[in-house]
Image (cartoon, rainbow, N blue to C red; front, side):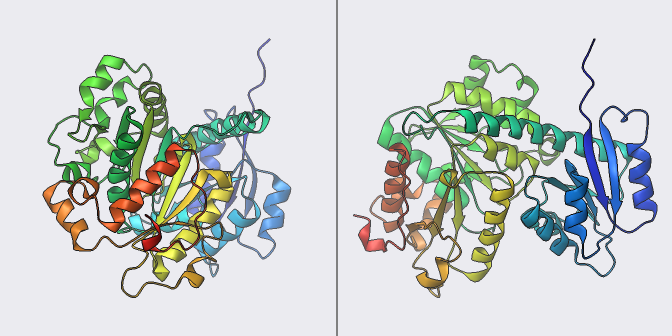
Length: 405
């Protein structure tokens, strides 16, 4: 006799109307009766957190139409009080700014209005599968007996704000790690939209990570070697997709399978995921041993870093997994150290402002650490690579640029 499938419990939040009726109809269809259970339909009342907690859902589906209530504030409040429950936000338009805001507020995924029943169920199933996988990984980590320092094999470089220098840091860090370890280092373009690895490294190839997606379930070693590119520095590079339509079709499960295959073939993997926060980014972060969160000493960047720190709690990431990197620490007009510390209270690794040489290296397609190895930023990145290799990304609070020798 087969076991009864476990239903995924849902709570919807929004004003009564056509959208809520569409959700109820989709979740009441015969095709979903053995998958989802709608346990409560709520509006944005003052007692919302208590009502959701009492309903004990697996997923919260929240509509942007909340009357006088602030959509983002409600997501933020639910994320703070109920970090273990996945939030899916229904946003009013295909606006990347709004999408970024809801993800930073604490949502795990979003759905664009108007949507079809197929769209809704596809997003809910994807979130359900990701949450179940994360739960299994978390339980495994909790039951595992520590046996000393853990290898830092996969490093994700991410920033919640654009222009912070993610790709520059990821590229130069990968090269510094290869020089430090002489191991097989792979740099992966995880920015599925508008990646810049080709520009940074002056690489011209038609092969990208998209070529591995059709073979994600069964990664062939020879195929991987045909797709990746060997850079003159010695590192291997897996480029971002060039075609935006192809990039839109890449699913979290595909990326999960690809990353698993790559982790078997390379000693160290550095992934540049840029600034987008979505299901694909979170999937890569889940698989990482270290997440380097890049910020700069300005209020907007520090504000976004604070929001992302809140998200890491809802994602159940350990403090050891997160390492803050303060880029351009001494740039003109920078926020003072005493104002940075409350944002990254576990400390940060400082990278000095590389000046005009950073732009020159990008324009020439020659990484900073190769073109200007004595630049203060290059020396800092070499130090960061040494710490990653030694499994010791220890906190160095407010270390001045001239202390990096």
